[in-house]
Image (tube, rainbow, N blue to C red; front, side, top):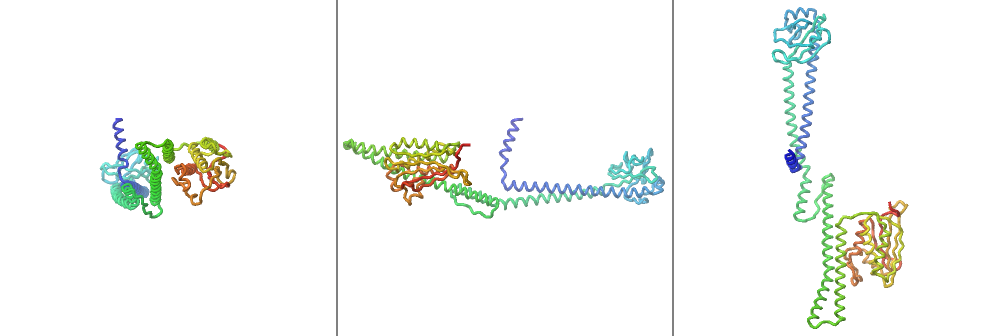
Length: 476
């Protein structure tokens, strides 16, 4: 049994969404309207039935009460006077006395009376109303009222055949209206689904066309309803995908361009070394100079590839957040740069500032700023690092401000808008080692932490980089 249940469940899971959305909308609309029409029809039928029985009961009771007040009722019924003589030509009349057999006022089949009528005859009940089945197999509506001399009960019984025939016609009409309503609801649901889902079909065709042709052209948006919002969101996704593809192409193109120079230099130096070895060799000084050049090109390629890997890893890998003291991160970066540039003086002024982020990526960004300052600083120059808070206790959002200043020749006005672009290198920097990715990694890390970074001029005439990052002066 468990195997059969598992297979049935698997079949339900596989066929649950096999129907199209239009067919499901049509089916649900048809079912909803059919249930509504069935409920209305059933309510109308029951209301008509109750009203007809109520009217019949009131008519029989009033006629029985009027007939029971006839003074010679007992004599008339005993002589089997026709019912029309008592003003009840459409009913059958009987007379019930306690301890006596039922006396009928006509010669029709006997009525099967019981305790309710005897209770009225004995004075226990004021009246009774019920339905019975006569000896002829027909159903009757029977009322019993006490006679005027309180010696028995007068019983009027009217056949229910006309009433039931009328109710059958009403029920048939309700059924026909229900079927017509359900069919109309199905057609209406199909029309609504077909016309209402036209934007969805257009969006589906656009997505299939994009998947086939990789053409990221946005689709036209009409209106401002939910489907229009869906199309707008789809266009925004296309724009983001197009921008990502453009960045990927630019990254690949720029990386290829940057790698071409050291590879060409390496190939040239190796060819010279091979030719020199075949022709008798180079002098020790020339050979050492050539090998130093090869080593420098390999170091440049290693730096470039490392920055590319770091950039790709930072964009794709998941990030683990923690509460980090930015002052401590800056101290670790300063210690690392001091080992790399022992002749450089680093003046550090740090205030505690806690941020929620990644310690490793923040340290990488600060290290890149310090490396850039060290690269452009003159020998025995000074780099100033200052971390302070801004907006604490005020209405504005609190931000930590990290400023790194060097004593170099500064950044040209033409280069300021591009210093954080990938692979951008000014004319002066092309003779210096570097990949052109360090500052772009800084911007990416800072923006991922909700901050901003900008470049400007320092008071000493050098470059000044300012990082503003949200946080608080004390940890939670």
